[in-house]
Image (cartoon, rainbow, N blue to C red):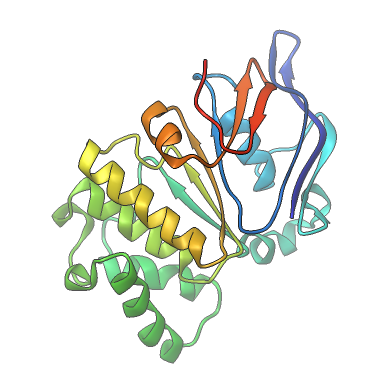
Length: 226
């Protein structure tokens, strides 16, 4: 499903973010990408989303070379991927319902589908009672659940979660990880970049470790070992 083929990303003669990175992720896997700050985690995700170009190598998603996708086709390609960020990236002037609906509107969904699907995903993330609350009226954990609802509402094949618990306390962190596990159980592939050792070790799922832009470990039931 996802294949990095000898991928390098060099920003300058003194700044190499990724160096000769190769790995494959199969459908329905839950994979943690771990490493210290500057290890290359964010660059790897940007390359997969075609937000950046590799200096060498190729990146494939569902047999598509993501960097051969034309600019006009990129929005359609990216609808196959839902993204969750550390800072939520919610629209402050829109309610939880409207934030999730916005993702469907951007994909060209009908009003009827929006009225049906948005409540369903808000129910799934446990926020149907907060549908008409604005972001400033929600806790950090609730904001992240809205972000996850927005990421899954168009039924993507892949969820990318970039430090999804970085701004959360332990209780909310646990709830968000359980929610990502539930989404994964619905046959959605999940890639999570994190530096949270406890999360990774408790998951007992595949772990890819980056150090200095290189993969140093790739373990099926891995631990965060640095």
